[in-house]
Length: 440
Image 1 (spheres, one colour):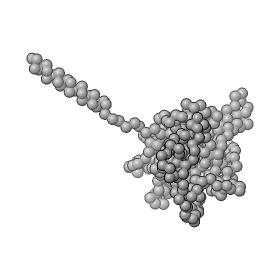
Image 2 (cartoon, helix red, strand yellow):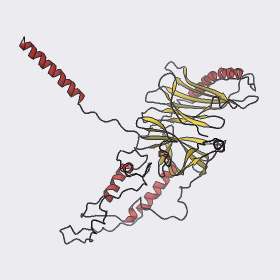
Image 3 (tube, one colour):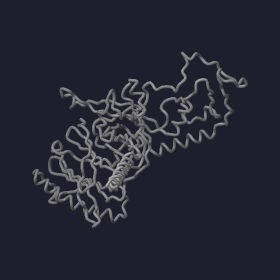
Image 4 (cartoon, one colour):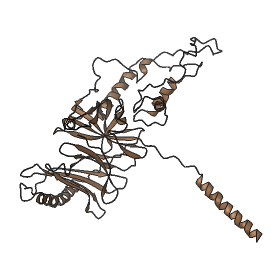
């Protein structure tokens, strides 16, 4: 009997050790994602907009979404700090960069009528298309190639150096000399407070797009050991690609467009993304296999749209211009929202009526393996009822939280206000995962 107890004790001890080993094995910390989504709006041509602005939408931080337009808005929102860069995209493909110069809190006349008016924050800056960026990079490379070779630099020592065959400067008194890495006094992008504890937090998230290798090299140049040597690179100052230059007027390609106001009829929109880390490009656009496939898909969507519009007209006592509702201003886009995901189609159409403005219909469908279209989202309204049901205008698709799955970004436009919302399509129905506050 004692022998049996001993064996049972050993078994229990072995089980406990196994559990402890299983509980104490090393687990990598999950990646911390800080990612802002905005909508870049402009009039005119993309390369030369006549007016433009950046509308903050969402901020994914601490594993959940925040309203980017109001998050840490002291004195301005976290996502609209001067110098932040946004990649303007179409279905995940980079088409240009917006460098924020300033932000403004705009209060409309409609909002001023309220007792406690709440404005909307917008960002403004210089925009360069990807083609313009490539042209500037090529010009910079050609300019650097024409520069003459530089002479070797001089190595400077200190009084603490025992070697007398090297020149040195007398070091100032340690009570007045600065010996550490230069500190940032509030110019860091993404800063929301000037208090030391916030500025010195190494884990404080930021939104920036700088080359990690370049930052490491710059840090090495700045960091000096007290009493040690400072050895400048064996190159001329003119060879530094980041060396500031003086310009008369505004540098080529860096023109700030006028500040866009209101909702003009020729308004264009595109997704803009700012991330704390560099991410590989993931394009969600789905190319049509043939023109025949697109025409077949469009015909199938029109067949889904006709009865929905007819039912809406009858319910709201609206008169169509023709016996069968007319379909106008059709737009059809195809996406693949995730690796191996079903083909997803976003379809919008307008149907004119005798009075009261057009009817607006938005459909989001997925093609099943059987070939038929499954409706995941349907929204319909008209110009006179947009305060009851907003006009659901598609902007684009975007990976808002770096989950490698794109969400659908819509503008929800009412009569005198609007919101932006993200919808995720995992099951048969689209689910709203985030919506901004009201923008007037």
